[in-house]
Every structure is written in C-alpha cells, then in structure tokens.
Length: 333
Image (cartoon, rainbow, N blue to C red; front, side, top):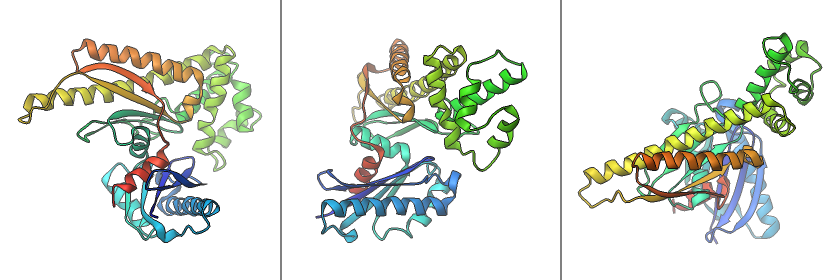
C-alpha cells in the first residue's frame, strides 16, 4: 500500500498526517513552528521532520507493518513560501529530510485543498497571521494579505494582541480611556505593571504566539462588556471581511475578463461561491457569526456591481490543511 504524508506548518505549530490512497488517515504528529521567517529555515525543516516522524510512529501503532519507504510522496504547506526566493530556500532544506518526491506550497494553498478537495472556493485563514486565498475552476490563484506582522496580517490574532497592548499602554499613561483590559492582559503575559511590560515584550520570552494568544483575552473581555475589547474584535472582523471581498472581486472580475476574450466559449454565467473559514480566531462564536453576516453584505455588494455571482455560502472545511497537503502530494504520482 502507498501512503502520502502531508505537513501543515505555521508560526505556532507544525502538523503532519499520513493518508492512504483513499484519503483515510493512518497517523498524525505535531512539532514546533515551521514558518521560516520566525524560526529560520533550518529549524523549520527540523520541525517538519519531527512532525513527520511523530506521524509515522502513530501510523505504526495502527499498522505495525507500516514502513517509511511506503510513503510515495510528501506534501508541504508552509507559511511564508509564497514568493519564489522563499520557495527555493525552503525547498533546499526540505529535500534533505525526505527521500521522495514532494510538493511545496504556502499553508493557505494546502488549507484550500483540504477545505474543498480540489474544487473552486475561497479560504480565509485567521490565526496568528491572516491571509485569504481563492482558486477558480481554471486553477487561477488570488491572494489578499499574508503580508506578515510588520506590513499586514490585519485582523489576525497577532494584530488583535498588538491592538490590545496599545490600548493598555494608552490607558496606563492617560492618552486613552481607562480600560478593563489592563489587568487581564498583564496577567496573561505574567507581568505586574506597565514598568515590567516594556522589557517583557522586547525579550525573547515574548513570542509572536504569546501576543497572538491575547486575542482570547480580548474576546473574553468583549463578551463581558469591555467597549475597547469589543471595538478591537469588530475592527478585526472588518479587516478579514475586506480580504474575502477583495479575493471574491478578483475571481469574479477575472471570470468576466475570461469570457470576453475567450475563443472557447467560456461563460460568464453567475456562479455560487463557497467561503471556508479556518484558524483559531473562528473558535470564537462572535467572529464566526460576524464574518458570516459581513461576508453576506459584501457578496450582495458584488452582485449589485453586476459581477457574476448567483449565491454564496460560508462552509466548514472538509479537511484540515495537513490533509490538504497530503492531497497535493497525491497529485505527484
């Protein structure tokens, strides 16, 4: 029997899965982060290897006869490899950890493959970072955001955490209103006051993950009535909705263009768009509901602009991104 190994790697963790030819899961494993901008390409590749080994050990518990050599191909879906130079860099490191053909895509492409099983659709990914990706029936790709924490990732967990820290800073020095966010944010970071906050956030102990984890504090405080927390959460939802709307507009606009120049009878007939939400932020009920409502408003706007959309639906991904990476590996053989 042949198997396929898929790896989903991001700024928080790396997850590996082993599938058989019928896309049934035989093993799973996890390891540390594998976003090379955060941990470096060498550590990123090592964590991919560790997650893969853990998945193989898990597979042996299900099937003692399982052997690494039965893996026909590997698929990697890693954050930060969308651009050519990053792709080439990580390809070199990954070639050293596997002795089989492998595909390498950015993590949101693997998430799309898992969410839709190769069918058209849009994936909005919002965890530590944020990116939106769509692919149409021709395989053409459309991206928004995914610029990283310094330039973009607006609406992400890290963005929410930074906004919470800024709100706390303004409250502590009187530039902003007194906010109930101060105590829970300081407690979540393990610091006593504003004097300890600055050195802590600039220390090695304060990772992007720890700042992104403040999103949970913001969500909880918003539910408890904090107006500042509610404002941060609402603005995050707005940014994420803008990403979905932009990808949808590009996809639908390209559909019109293709129909206008086609000699093969390509149609601009209205289509249904499926939008899948993935990432830790959507564990929050408000974020899921807010995105669903806001996306509906955005799609109505696109329809009023005479773009070829008949209907839309927000769906749950069929599979996770690790399974999606394994599905992409299947295409190699």
